[in-house]
Length: 408
Image 1: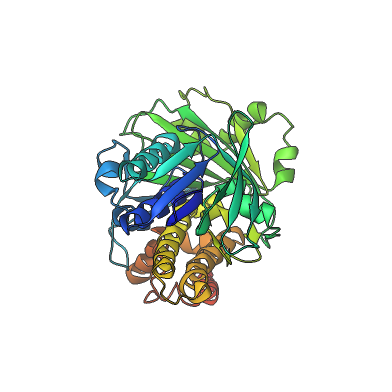
Image 2: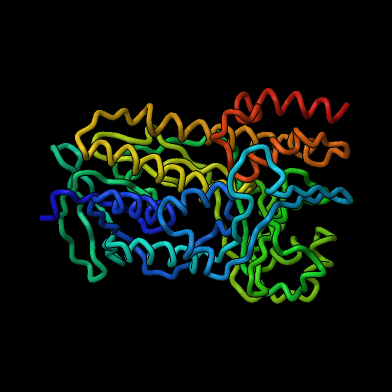
């Protein structure tokens, strides 16, 4: 039997570690159940400045600042001969102006270690295989690395299992996403470039020269390596062949700028794939549990929103749960799901506008008004919960109108 005040978190990634640290700092005993052992590879290396606020709340800012990650100051967009750059210091919303581009194996290990440092227990290589929320307190069945199982009781369970989506699967909460099915191929490479060849402090989003719904990401790290990926509909990749290893580099080199920049690059890591990654659930919370980050909903990698949404959900959930455990009246819909969803919907509007071409027309417009560019920049920096920004409120119609004006 576990401690009376124990909260169980499934998953030691950014959402789980931040939520655990926030709750532990508030005086609650937290245990994380993590299926893997860290460090382990994970995709999603480009953070947004909004993330730094949640890292600071969790008491992890100094550790992250001192870890030697690549400083990230903005984002650059390229399409054929068109270029557009956004500097996060020139944004509408006040807050952090910079963040980092991180190797997730190192970053996630760092956050988990910081959580452990303040007293969070992490049970590595253990997996939640069953969950019972029918009694007064939740019971989880957990399988250890040697195959044995045990049951554990908690006051509350937070699912931060990411694409593992433990509770959505076990509790039948899965819901089809209304986003079209897309696929990404990605790897890490030794880019063999110098700072003079391109600005390593930016994430690069590059549109395929012939297919505007196909795009590449280039995320430079501080060690001369980078994350490189391409996103398209599955049938686009199928038209090129079945072997991802064989089609990846030629596909990258279809973009002339990438072909020139990476002409000396060493493609030394296996190409991975994610397909149909957009997900949703019927509810983000229930009696005795709440879903954090990708365990609840994931949109698309184009604006690096995944870790930001994950950390925001951790911050919101930790605050609501702290009040609940202190016998205060809480409303998980009003205080957690609704505010989280507001930001998700803003990101959703921008992702949709990217793929239907509206946002591309805005981003590459040659006479951008400085104040509007600052508002768009705030969204790209992750400040999607700032309702003072007109492009947070009523995102879709405003983007549609702005795109029409740019085209005229």
